[in-house]
Length: 104
Image 1 (tube, one colour):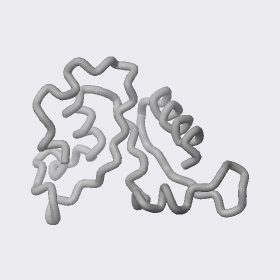
Image 2: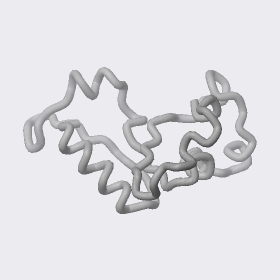
Image 3: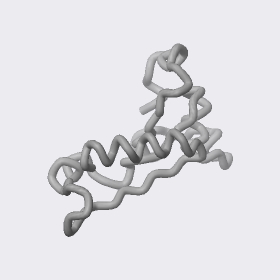
Image 4: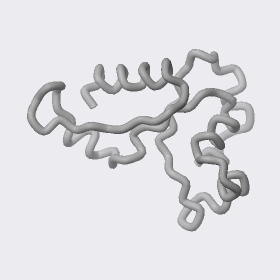
């Protein structure tokens, strides 16, 4: 959970680094209530504020073991499709390209 990361962890992170947010907000099960999100800020916008960098939301709709067990080469039958979301298009493209190279 982002709230438990050391303060300043991303302070020296170069702006060209792609921050991939794989999490989902679970106020009852894990995260507790985060006022900004409860007041209407999207979870990804909240993360962008916290890490002070553009964020791509990806891999939050699949279990980790499925990445390993269900991965298939491109253009093969039954290839999986994962969604990503982010306003920072260059970062989103870099995330998608990394996924393709990893055959995810």
